[in-house]
Image 1 (spheres, rainbow, N blue to C red):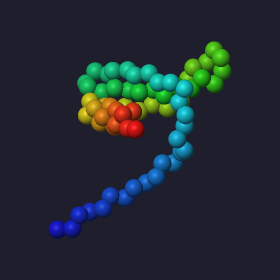
Image 2: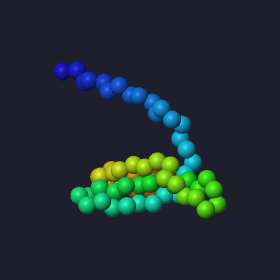
Image 3: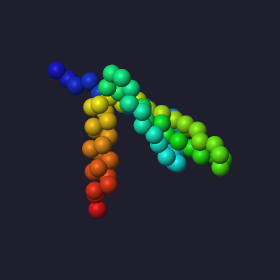
Image 4: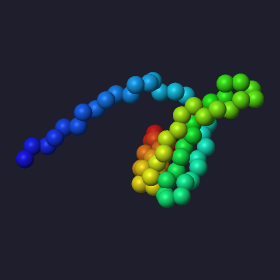
Length: 71
């Protein structure tokens, strides 16, 4: 049996540089990560957000630790 290849669609928007983030835990084992921007001195806005399952969050932590620990 042949393997079906998945079509990959590249990101539509370029990566943005976030000024910070906040994490909220939602009932049901999900978390929301808000990426923050500070366009003016007294303004803080959510520029984008993602929602992760516990497994997705564990994978993110693992990959970030690999990034931080690499020399």
